[in-house]
Image (cartoon, rainbow, N blue to C red):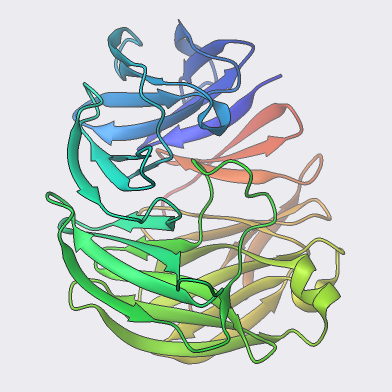
Length: 332
């Protein structure tokens, strides 16, 4: 059994104690390297991969992305990797930024080990913490290089973060989604699922837009925001409902705080190419390319099952159970 992952433009699969780099054009293997059981792979720049143990149960290793050779092995347990930053927590419940190659501590943010949902721009790392003794989320921004506090602001009173349903693995948990200097997070407030957008350079909320009514505790427990993608001027939220309810799942596009379109799709998985093409694979086994401006299907094709989507080079990769299928994209 293996899991697929992308790291930059490359495609990998991990399983049974091995990491394979795949040739995106053919699906063949480029190299194989031994790794820990159910490891995860992250692109940390400069031609390097960070391979972490599942659920942060062990250390990590740094590999050469070109040939899979080990460059370093670090016994330090980490909690997250985001845009090349490696994060850990201290025994004193502090958040720490590590040197990826050595595991040495570069900076410390006191009493922030409960932080969740990391995103880093070129100069700011932002994350959420709960207000002491409450579920009220606070979004903080710290200097990426030093950990010094840049800004902090509270989300609305009586609101709470919408935590992904599969959130036991903190390394892969996402509650903040970013692009350049923008960060998005989803919160439940006044029985509504609301998407917030912030400028993380200035530490300023730009807009907050209700997406769905969440009338019952059952509905609130079933709904998750899988991801938020920035496509041109749109923020596109992918929403799933574990009750397989088409009324509460699909894509919702927001521009400058206003909903531009809604596209009901059954528990979709979404991928966006570097040139802004938008794809969705649905639970009822259909792959769509959508018009980002309207959400209308440009074309669709059946898939052998419900798929998780990845982009690698000029290919859409669909993971269906334990198999991978590549769809080569033609130039528009």
